[in-house]
Each structure stands twice: as C-alpha cells, then as structure tokens.
Image (cartoon, rainbow, N blue to C red; front, side, top):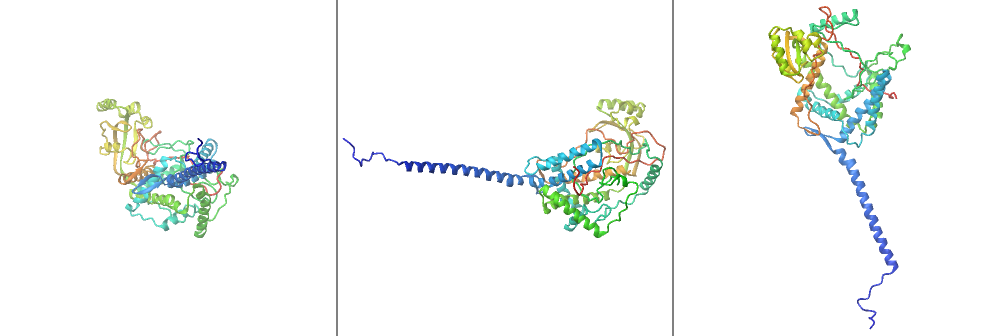
Length: 489
C-alpha cells in the first residue's frame, strides 16, 4: 500500500537554492578560517620580530639589561663610524693598505645593512657593552659623578675643531726629573741621528714599519676636522684633503675662538645626527645612554686611574732562558750552577726568539710588563742571583737578575703599557664583583701562552752608553676618528 504523503519517514527535499546557500556558507567559513590563520601568523610574526626579539636580553649587569634592540642601536653607531673612518683612510693611504681599508669599509656597510632584525651578535662588541656598564656603574667608586651637563659637553667636544676643543684636555703630569732628562736626551739624539739604533742595556726597541690590516673599531670617537685631514696625517699628504701643491706654502688658519668652536661643534653634531642616527636607527636618548655616557665614563675612569699610577715603580733588569719542559729547565739550571755561561745558553737554548740573540736580556721591567708569575718569581731576587726554574703560561723560565731598583722611572712605552694594565685590572676586578649574566662571560683575564718580552727588551745592536730609551715607531694610520662629511667611495 502506498505511504501517506504525511508519513514521518518521507525524506525532506532540499531545493537547489538551499544547497547553493549551504555551500556558500561553508566556503565563507573556510575563507574566514584561512584569513584568521593568516592574520594570526602575521600578528605572531610581528610580535616576534618587532616586540619579542628586540626585547630579548643578551646580557645583564647588576640588573641593567642589554637587549637585542640596545645592541642594534650601539652596534649601528659603531658600524656607521667604521664605514666613515675606513672610507676616508682608504683615500689617504695608497697601495695595498687602501684596498684593505676599502674592504673593511665594505664589510662594515654590509653588516650595517643587515643589522636591524638580525640575530647575529658580535661577541667582542657585546663584551664591550658589558664593560661599558661596569665603567658607568662603578665610576662612583672613584668619586666620579657624571652629570647631564658633562654628557652634553662631551658630545659636542667630540665634534669641535681639533685646534680649539670645547673642553680642556687632561694635562699630562709634570715629568719627574729622570723622565725629563730622558726627554731632553731623546730630543738631542733625534736631531743628530734620524735613524738611531737600539740600546742593548734596556732601551725600548724600535718597531719595524710595515703595512697592517685595520682592526675593528670599538668605541669610536668622532672629531670634526676642518681641513678634512685625519688626525696624525700631516697636512699636504697626497690624498689627505690638502692639495699636494700647497705643501711648500701652507695657508695659516687662525685658531677659532670659543663661539666659532661651539658653532662648528654644533654644526658637526647636526650633520652627524642626520647621517648616523637614521642609519643606526637610534634617537638622541639612546645615543646618550649607549654611546656617549659609556664613552665618557671610560674616559673619566681611565684618567683617574692613570693619575693614581704615577711615573715610576719598582723594577728589575734581568735576562731569561725560556724552554718548553721542566726537564730541560732543570738540566740547564744544573749547568748554570756548574759555571756555564748564562748568555750563551740563552742564545742557544731559549725559545724566545726576540731576546735569545741578546743573551736573553729583558731590559728593565715592572710588574706591568710581565706575567704575574714572572714578577712574583723574580722581583724579590737580589742583583746577581739566578732563579730556580719556574713555570709561566709560556713555558719554563730561568731568570738572572742583573740590577734592581725600588723606584725607577717608566719609559714612555712602559708608562703607556702600565696605564693599559691598571685599567684592565680595575675592569676585571669590577667584573668579578658584578652580577653579570647572559651569553657571555665577564672580562677574561687569562694570560697568553706565548712569551711577550717587556717593552724595554732590547732587540738590536748596542749604542753608546748614555743614549736615552727610544720609543716605538708606528706606521699604522690612526683609526678611531670618523670623518665628518661625505665618505670617500
């Protein structure tokens, strides 16, 4: 029998229009889901790249965080300065050095172009930022207070004319009599003999002049040079910003007065801001916090420590024999005890090729010039005594002390070295005290595994007695002063 039209099992018929509407609803839901997913991905990417990643903490010093964004800002300024410096110097020098500077500028520009948003970190520069915080945070332990006014003056002074600084440079202390006498003798010798040889009785060696690859810059200090000539390059040097034809009759420029110097500094800073701040993606406050204040703190701390150092210290004049093993050192010590000639053994057995030809002569050295273990083993020996073999990072040492002084004047090279050492020691001590966390370790203090002769170690033939100590000569262009203006391509 046929089922009734109203039977409950009769299938409900769906019209074509209803089916089409249903498919459209499903399509819209699918499109909406995809759009929501894409929006979530885009928002997530934005949050990660523009919010989370920049705020990632790379290091922390006593609670002061150095974020990835802070690193980008500071590193950007550093790279802008490098590009300017290396580009300018490439136009000053010639030959292979010019190519090296051009390559260095190109490398810095490449890193700068890809810096923002990058996860790459230059560990040496991040370590510098950690050290910067140590200088800033511990400056007050040396009674150094840094004010906003000081920072303002420091920034402008970096762009003032070289011959008219806005701030009075830190004066060198008056030379003690012995150092004053050396300075006078050096001037006399230099005027008589432009190529003096090196004393074998403790004089500072003359360094060979050779082209060198430019080092990466850290903490560059801008300085506006009104004639376009980098610091240390004589006016008239070909390519140095002054026509070569003007060398014979250089024009004499009057020294700017205070108002002119200030105007020059302000103009130079504005030019630098317009170029560097945009390239480094940094603003005024960030520049002060991560560039200017740390540089000023370093300057003030270093000056204070140098003033505390003085110009003399206990010193030893000795000679050494360096070998690789304790067994050989013991054998040589036995020969010396039996009357063997120390200088001859040093010449034939010592692996320190710098001093072996001179019988191991180290010249005069203070604790700042040698490894702590070396100073500890030799500073208490009387003149004429030979040490027992002792170990340093470089190997096994035997030292014969020829002279001692409880308070001998530094040579200029020794003073420069001592100033570096005391600053490094202060910084290492602060790093030990500080709460430092992150992907890097506190400032390393490990010694070298190669022996480095003291700066006064003779490396040449002797000159007549009474010749003053000679200072090292460097042909490396002064790097650390980005030029104000358009870099040379």
